[in-house]
Image 1 (cartoon, helix red, strand yellow):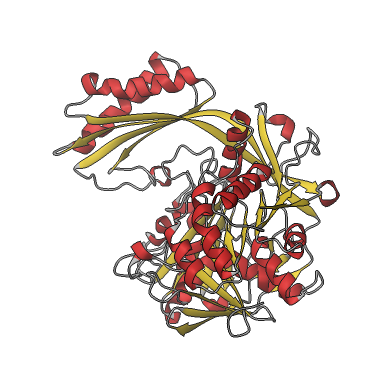
Image 2 (cartoon, each protein chain N blue to C red):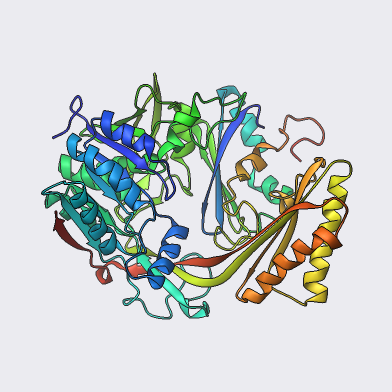
Length: 106
Length: 448
């Protein structure tokens, strides 16, 4: 995904949000296929424990993923080296694109 | 009193508690600013500030206040730039008094320093207040509470500006409100101008993290290159009377302002883009337009807003004991296997031999650490580090963790070196809501 999109992670309490934007408008449909709440829950069941919501910002060609119970307790409680989950943006950007090939994005 | 081409110019001179100072001095000197905001408080830092205050009633404000004020008071005074900051943290009174001392030492006469208090609501909240976003109440915490701070909005800051303050210092002033307040005052926006309050809140939201909109927290070599990050400039917002704004930075500074840096910050720490809650407004960023004008200038417009939330958010900090961290490194052939063996040994020693049940996590950096719970298996590096961390209310357990990791030097896998360990005080936070009527901001002016 890093080839087509850029992203930034933020934290509030135990909720993580990652906003994601495509470089090329033509890739926006591919991004929407690739990043779905169902897939995020499926890929990271031990880390992303709560509900995942996805907001679509059509005119700026971006997504905002809001992931509940996703920070191992939050910045003041987490035992992860990255207590803020700043690196979660690259967790998402590390996903394989759902380009219709068998196995991709599933 | 606006200084540049009819717009009101606000600069950010700190976007978090430990932010850089030299670019702030440069911006204050050359930015022709009406206002410089120093945003220095987070959920974590306010709680730690309360601990500092408990240890010494003269402390509890931002530990970099002295350095920041010494460097910025003279240049902002010369430029006629008002400073607005939440560096007061858990002790705005002490921060304002210290600022007055520094101003006197610098020979700045007639400087007006406004101190905003009233965010400390520890005497106003009951024991059974429910948490804002999770089950339970304050009574369930079961640990000593160190501080309770309500988020204050623009209406707490405007009276300080009306009194002619040169420096405004508060505690838990909401980040975007420090930008919105001077805009409301300058342009005469009222509480019913919801679109303008939304626009001013958007400016504040984009600016509050400082360099996160001028190329910081952004660079990714080969994909998102940023020039000269070691000289990155802080942002400037040129805000028009209708709330439309251009985000830019000083010529000759490093960094970059473009559509991508602005979009990443637009939804930073935002959940529903149509409902960003502040003490001033329910802001709507879902239809914001972002237009790259080139040369590090980006125009933003079309923020909206609905009525402000009925209640104010309160951050409650409590003593959570200590956090312990310790590590040992392994390098060369099979470093990953030796690091993982070390991790197994530490877990067995802590859990089985010592019977410690506090939360413990052992990672092998260079093999699997940040994404370990995400289930991502990576190829091993030949340079790995065991990293153990524990949270506990029993300091003896924390000391045992450090002892066990250090003991790996003689008792663990081959070739382990570079032990380091540290125990730090831990504060946890929860959020509750409070009725606005129970929060009474007070402004006092100190004059040098």
